[in-house]
Amino acid sequence: MFDSFTLVAATADLADERAARGVADLVEFRMDLATDPLGQLAAYDGELPLLVTNRPEWEGGDADGGTVDAETARLEALEAALGNDAVAAVDLELAALRRDERAVSVAEQADSLGVEVVVSVHDFAGTPSERAMASLLSAAASAGDVGKLAVTAHDREDALALLSATHAADAAGERVATMAMGEAGRHTRAVAPTYGSKIGYAPVHAEEATAPGQYDLETLADLVAQLRSQ
Ligand SMILES: O=C1C[C@@](O)(C(=O)O)C[C@@H](O)[C@@H]1O
Image (cartoon, rainbow, N blue to C red; front, side, top):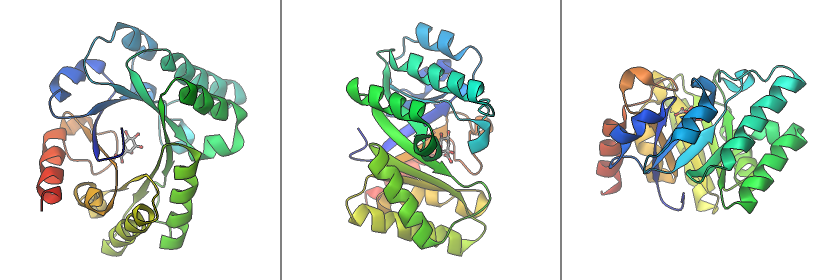
């Protein structure tokens, strides 16, 4: 997984798997946005493998990670999810891995279970310099199986810088996934795979986007396929 482009249907409702089947390669289960996430996981009998994400508020998600206890509970929920056979990948924030031994332990457990680790970085305010993105991508890629960087583009220069950083990381042999959030970055979701990005995220239904600027699943599948076959 993630050696070639992987199309991910992002959702807080595992019932969406049926609609994603045949289009997506993987379902991202946003546990932080879900009702009864561990219950949904236990009842899951879909065909697509799962990527589990429990994004904290401090990185743009909904899970409480504001106190030591809350952050422990957030990581414990991810750890519990790893025991489910359908779980093929787990998302951990680079910032959590850098400062929290418990996050490192979740990554180690994932590794021992053959579960891939996506290490992610988000910038909801803007797009860092290309140099800063290069260093974030390489830190994230070396901390797990794929390094993911989602930035916010305000103009074309931001989008171009992200694509350029993606190309450079891919050319250096790093496994990365990139996307620019927001209207100015929207096209990067379709184009970044051509420059080496290994994951694209899309909601099954456009109105249930998990990040600004996402295309719906069918549209992203179509755009990526068209561009990559050129
Ligand atoms: O981190 C990411 C990327 C993302 O934020 C996006 O911009 O598509 C969507 C999230 O669901 C996922 O966890």
